[in-house]
Length: 383
Ligand SMILES: O=C(O)C(=O)C[C@]1(C(=O)O)C=C[C@@H](O)C=C1
Image (tube, rainbow, N blue to C red; front, side, top):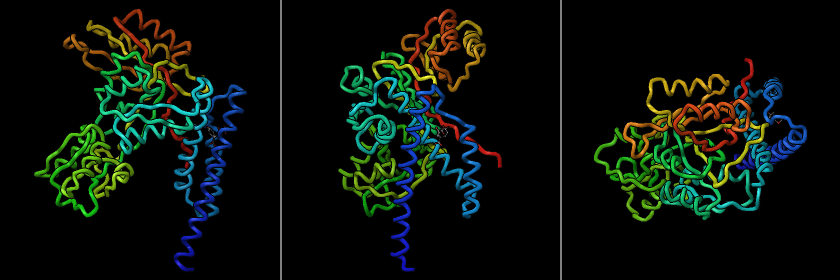
C-alpha cells in the first residue's frame, strides 16, 4: 500500500476512535443521571475492575498487550468519572450555565490558561477568560465581581507549595470550590531559527525557574529575566525578535506566539504536575456521591503538643489528611498558620464534629472550602 493511502486509513480509523470516545462520554453522562436518581456514588471500582479485566482478555485476542489496554482505559475512565462528577456537582449548584468569567494568571497560552480551559470546558458552554498579571489581581477580580471564578496554582511536584497563593487565602473571603491537576511540561521556546547553543537570555515566571533549577544550573553566561507568567515570557520573546532570547513554558502556549521548541523535559521532576484550586465568592456543598476534600486553616498557639492535639482530633474521627502546610502570620513573628487538606466532606457527621472540637481547642480556625476531589486514583487489576 502507498504511504498516503495507509495514512488516509489511519486518519479514518482515528476519526472513528474519536466518534466512539464521544459516544462513550455521552453514555457516561447517562450513567450519571441514573446514579443521581438512585442516589448511588459516582465511582464503582468493582465495576471498573471487571471492565478492565474483560478488556485486557479481549485485547489479548487482538494482540493488544495488557499494559497498553490498561493505560488507555485508565485515561478513559478518569475522564468518565470527572465528567460525571462535574455534571452532578453542576446540577447541585446550578453552575452549568451558558458562560462563566474566570480570572487566571497570564494570557492565552499560560499554564493557568490551559488549566482554566480544562476545568471549565466540562462545566460551561462559554469561558470568558480574564487574564491577570498577579495572584493578587486575580483574587481582586473575583472579590469585586469582575470574575465569577479564579483558577490559582497552589502546589507543584517539583517546586512545592506556592506560598504567595497560600498567603492570599489567609486574607480573602473567597472559598475554594474546586481543584484540578495539570501536567506541566517545560520547554525552551525560541523564534524560528533560534539555536540552543546561542541563547543569551531566558524569560520565565519565577515558579518555572524554580521547577527547572537543575537545567538552569548547567547553563553559563545566561541572563534570566523574571516574567509575570509564561504567556508574558512568550510575548517578550516574540516582541524582541532576537533569536538569542528564549522563553521557558509549555509547547502549546509557545505555538500561539509563533515559538518553536529547542529543548524539552526541563523540570527537575520527571512527573511535573501542578495542582490548581478554583475559588469563588460563595462556598459550595459537595454531593455525597462524590469524593470531597475540605481545606481549613488553623492557629493552634505554641503550647507544647498543640499541633499534635489538633491532628489527634482528625485521627479520632477517622479523617485522613492529604496535606499540611504552615505559613507565617503577618505581624506575629515566629507564629505559624497551619493549612490542612483533608479527604472529607465538610457536611459529613464526622467532619462536622471534628471541626466543632477543633474550634474549641484552637485559637483560630476557618474553613476555606469543601470541593470535589479530582484526584482520581486508577483502579489496578491483578496481573
Ligand atoms: O458503570 C458505571 O457505573 C460508570 O459510572 C461508568 C464507569 C466507566 O466509565 O466505565 C465510570 C465510573 C465508574 O467507577 C465505573 C465505570
